Structure formats: C-alpha cells, structure tokens
Image 1 (cartoon, rainbow, N blue to C red):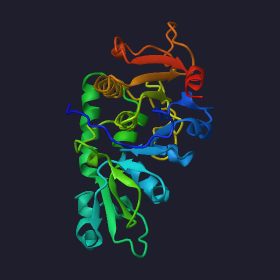
Image 2 (cartoon, rainbow, N blue to C red):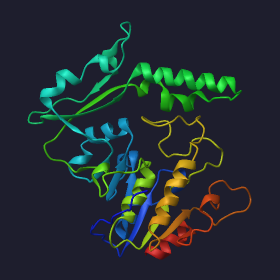
Image 3 (cartoon, rainbow, N blue to C red):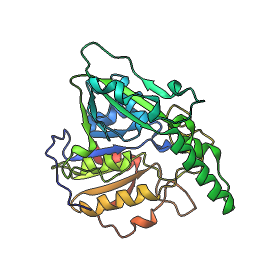
Image 4 (tube, rainbow, N blue to C red):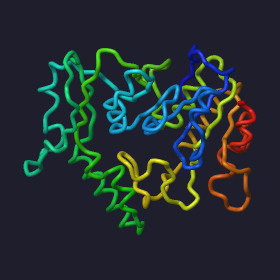
Length: 305
C-alpha cells in the first residue's frame, strides 16, 4: 500500500473522532449528543436520520439517492467515481445499449434519472450492464451447485439481482459539497468499503489522536443481516445472511498499522465475552496490534465527555 499522507483538517474536539457504522449495536445511541462531543464520520444511509460531520458512500445506488435528497448541497460527502459529465454528452451516453443488447426487455425501466434543474448543466452516470450481471449470477450459482453450496437468494439479489442493473443518471448542481474519494492524497481510496474509508479519512486528519469505531459490529449474533437499515432501499433483506467481514477486518488492520501514533478503540455494547458472543468479541486478525483496544459504549462516553 502506498504511503498515506495526512490531511490538514480542523477537528472540533481535541483529536477525538467517532467512526459510526450502521451495525445494530448503535441503536439507542443519542447521535446529536455524540456530535456535540466529538467529530463524527458516518456512512451510507445514516444521512436519512442524522447529519454527521462527514459522510462516506461508495455504493452506486446509495450515492445517487443521497445526492438527489439535496443532502450534498450543505453537507460534506465522499463519493467514489463521482465523475461529472457535460450535458451535451447526454444523448450519446444515456442509451439502452449501455444496459443490455436484448430487444425483448423494456430497457427504459432500467434508466433511473433525476429531473433536470434549470442551470444544472452536468450529470453523473453510473451503472451496471444487465447482461453481464445476469451472466455473473448464473456462473456463481452454477459453481455453488457444483460444489454443493447452499445459497440464500436474498444474498444474491442484493449484489447480483436485476435491480442492481441499469443506469443511474443524476443531474448535479454547479456547486455542492461532494468530494471524490479518489481525489484525496495518493489519488486512490484503495478500494476500501465505506466503513473502512471513514476510518481512513479520520486517520488522515493531522491532529487525530483517538478514533472510536462505534456500530462497526463486523459480525452478527444470529448470522443474519446486521444493519439498522436492512430491508430498506439499497440494503439486504432481514432474512439475508450476514455479510462476510473478512475484507472489512483486513482494511481496518491496514489502517491501524499505517497510523501507529493513533489510538483506536473498537466500541462494543458490552465487555469482551468468552461465551461465543459474536459481537462483543476479540477480532482474531487484530490480536497483537498495539494501538487497538476494546472498550464498551459506557467507557467511550467516559473518555469523550
């Protein structure tokens, strides 16, 4: 991994930052009160209920949802691959051929476009090819069948379902507060997930001394989806299996190691348990990391108050 450079950003609370995930362990946290105490970074659908100091989103559909809500007019948001295109290119780029080559499909239903506002002369276009997505899904299901692996259809649909195909076209204002994740020092976001990017961006602040990972549960108590927004637009259904956390774990580990001067805290609802507790547990891959500790939510409040 390339060397991380540090951003000179103003932090309002003595170098302490909370990186807020959407795991269910954060239910009941008084978020406005938390924001009064420390700077808060959040991700994805958090904007529906709360305005963090900085919001991070790398999901295509969710990014367009956030922008269309008007949130980006007044609030800082990090988006991945948010490339503005001139309105003159619209007719050439926004065509059904970018979605599928099949004639029997109503391709117009796969174009999700926001209304154009007078004076807004640029748009962002994102999407996935329907034919390619269906082929990937079929190849994956075939491989699972050949290996005797049971597949939860809810898990497949959220990633490879037809609803994930199409073009998302959003007309954008001349001025907004969107920052492309790739435009940060190093010109890359390393392909990290939204939660890990919250951690990375907070770590890159020059004065950051302590980072609290709150609501980043990683695992689920019942091996089903663990997210406060499950069952809503852009999210897996409540019946879906938990998302394997291995990538998230490795991404956070890289950040811990690259910023040894920062103290990181994995914040759990309860003390660490040795009784097969899936959430209040030590992460095996993080054992031996000197600048990582585990604390409870109560202990976090004692430290930041």
